[in-house]
Image 1 (cartoon, one colour):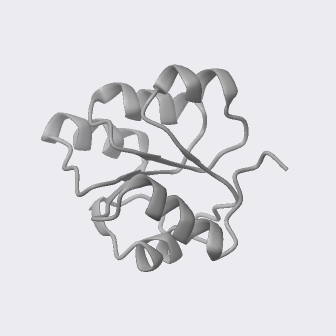
Image 2: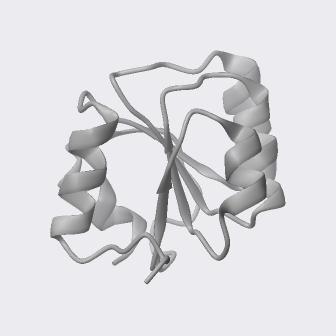
Length: 114
């Protein structure tokens, strides 16, 4: 799956465009960035309802290519600028976290914890 596929599956809106052809193999859904840092390994996309600069900084530290903001959350311009400078794609979707994760899982994206 590539980022373009995630956009289609989640009926997402691109807020900040990185490389939309980046291959995505696994995902993580969390609003707690400390959990992402502590427990997540080899994830390519982060789904979250948290809208602050720490989300982008966490994604960068974990080498994530894409962040999906659930529940239609809209990051402010400072977050968008930070993601742009890090070449991280930002997407928002109207779906709630559970639904968004389920949709991606049903299309073959794993959590990487098998």
